[in-house]
Length: 347
Ligand SMILES: Cc1cc2nc3c(=O)[nH]c(=O)nc-3n(C[C@H](O)[C@H](O)[C@H](O)COP(=O)(O)OP(=O)(O)OC[C@H]3O[C@@H](n4cnc5c(N)ncnc54)[C@H](O)[C@@H]3O)c2cc1C
Image (cartoon, rainbow, N blue to C red; front, side):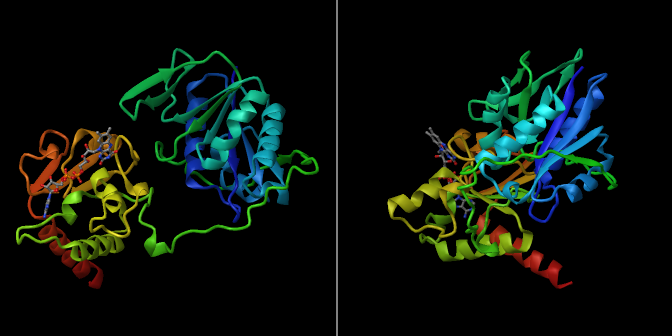
C-alpha cells in the first residue's frame, strides 16, 4: 500500500503558493486512484500552521512540519535536511512536490539519500491497473513519454501550470512538528534579498490567460518603406499594460539586438518561445508579425487556443498551426484593439 506524501515549502506570509496547491491536487487524485493508499502532507517554513489549516480538508491523514527561522528561506542544506526528515517520518513511497526552483534543487539529492529515485518535469500522473506512471515530455516537447518505476521512494516534481490547483475548505489541521537541528555551519548561505524588475517592466507572466508573441516583423520596413520600431514598442506595451498578457518573442526578434538593428528594448532572450526558447503554458496565444515557423511553433505545444495576425496569407500559422489567422497589418489591428481596450476600461 502506498503512502503518498505532498511536500511543500511555505511562503513568507504563511500561505501555500499555486504550484504547491497544484501538486496537492495531483496527490489527492493519486490517492483517489490508488486503492488503500494514504495521503500525508509535509510542510517546511518559518511557521507552517496557517498553510496546514488552509488545506486541512484535502483528505490527508497526517500533517507534519519542520518549522523555524532556519527553514524559512531557500537553502539546499536546510531544505534537504527538512525534506529527508519528513520523508523518513512518513515512510513515504510516492513523494510529490511542485517543480519550483527550490525543490528542483533539493529533492533529487534527498531521493539519493533515501535510496530512491527522482523525476522532474512531471506533467501528469496516470494510473492504470493500480500502477502509477508519470507523463513527461522529451526532445523540446516533441515526444511525450509515460514512465513507471519500481524503485521506492519515488520523488515526482510536478511542473507548475499543468494541473488545476487544489481548492477546498480551510480548517484546523493538527500538525506534528519534527525537531530538525541544522548542524553548525550549515546555515552559512543566507538570502540577503531579491532583485526584481519593477512590476510594469516585468513582461513574463506565467499565470496570464494570454500569451502575446511579437515577431521580427514589428521591426521590419513596412508599406511606406520605413521601420516603425518606437510605434511598435508603444503598441505592444500598451496592449500588455491593458491586458496583463505575458510577452513572448520569436528568436529572430530577440536575436536582433546582437546584430545592431533597431530593437524593442523590453525584449530579451528570456522572452523567446520555441525549440531553443521557452514552452509556456497559457490558455490562449496571439502571434503578431511572426511567421510561425516550426522551430518557433514547437514552443506553443501547450497553448490551447492559437491566433495569429500576419500580412502573409501563406505564413506558417495558416498551415494548420493556428486556429484563426487574421491576414492583416498588425500595426492597424493592435491600434484598434488598444482603442477598444481603452474604451472598455473607461466605462
Ligand atoms: C536550430 C534552430 C532553432 C530555432 N529555435 C527557435 C526558437 O526557439 N524560437 C523561434 O522563434 N525561432 C527559432 N528558430 C528560428 C525560426 O526558424 C525562425 O527563423 C524564426 O522564428 C522567425 O522569426 P519571425 O517569424 O519573427 O521572423 P520572420 O521570419 O522575419 O517573419 C516576420 C513575419 O512578420 C510578418 N509581418 C511583417 N510586418 C507585418 C505587419 N505589419 N503585420 C503583420 N505581419 C507582419 C511577415 O509577413 C513575416 O511573416 C530556430 C531555428 C533553428 C535553425
